[in-house]
Length: 93
Image 1 (cartoon, rainbow, N blue to C red):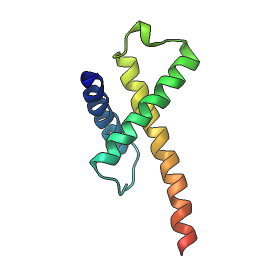
Image 2 (cartoon, helix red, strand yellow; image 1 turned 180 degrees about the vertical axis):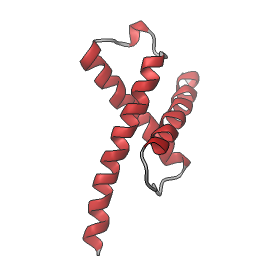
Image 3 (tube, rainbow, N blue to C red; image 1 turned 60 degrees about the horizontal axis):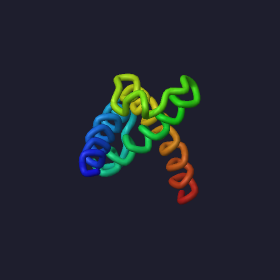
């Protein structure tokens, strides 16, 4: 169980950091937010991978395609975060 949590944190950090590098612009989130972004991206990427290709955990939890899916999911989550966050900032002005 501890190994799963550590791997989620490490993969979340990598996927979140790469998503922040791939999407131009400034994001006011720290390392915790980057890890959370990557973890959410992993779930989004895993869900999309299952829907599109019908792969599941029985075929291996850590695969290159899964990591790429995590990065793509993190990019999607970051774009959604920016869209929702920009509405909140505009309403305060």
